[in-house]
Image (tube, rainbow, N blue to C red; front, side, top):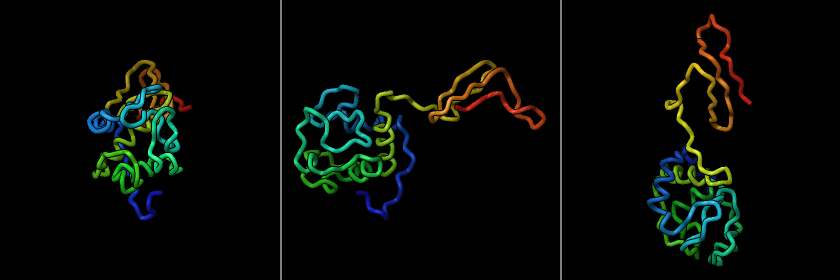
Length: 162
C-alpha cells in the first residue's frame, strides 16, 4: 500500500509514457493483448489487476503471494523501487526515480486494455471546422455541426455531450 503521506501522482502523459516504456521496459515486458511473456510478464491490462495472475509466467513467491492490486498509486510506489516495495521480486529493474516519468509510464499502462492504445488529442491540437465533426475526448462524444459563433448574442453552440 502507498504511504498515506505520499504526494499524489502528477498527471501523466501516455505518449511520453509509451516512449519511456519502450526505452526501459520493452526489453523484458510485452504490452500487447495476448502478447507472450518475456523475462517479465506481459503488461497488457496490468492496471487494477492482481499481482502474479498472468498464466504461464513463473512469478517469484513474493510476487505471487503478495495479494497486491496494481492500482496507479501502488504502481507509483513499486516503480520507484521494486525491490524495496516487494522484497524477493525477480524484477531486477532499479526503478524510475522521477515522479513525472512514473506518472507518464503509468498513464501509458492505463491505456493497455481491450480498447487498445488511443492517443488522446490535446486541446491545443483540436481544431473546430465548419462541418459535422466528432471528437472523442475523455469518454465524451460531442457532435458539432455547421459554423457557429460563441458571441453572447448568438444561441448556444449546436452540440450535445452524451
